[in-house]
Image 1 (cartoon, helix red, strand yellow):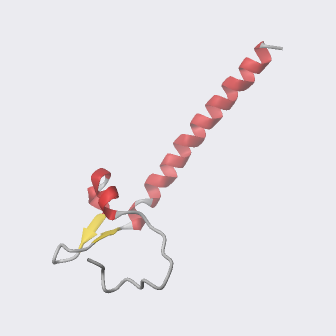
Image 2 (cartoon, one colour):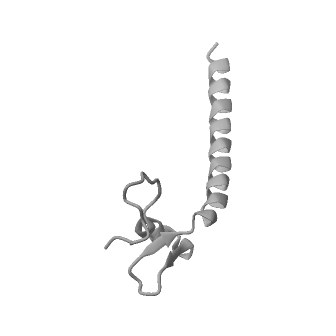
Length: 74
């Protein structure tokens, strides 16, 4: 069933509410009838920022390990 408020002539980007709901059910909202689910994107942003920070720490750590290994092999 397609939400009547969605303009199918426009290209849209997003994530599947059903997929997100499996991991973060608290950021999904549904309509009164239960037919439609929507993602509360503003709730995802802090998680994405923290994920990027953690990923950058891993990148930095791996870069240091590579430098150390390269130095030891000289």
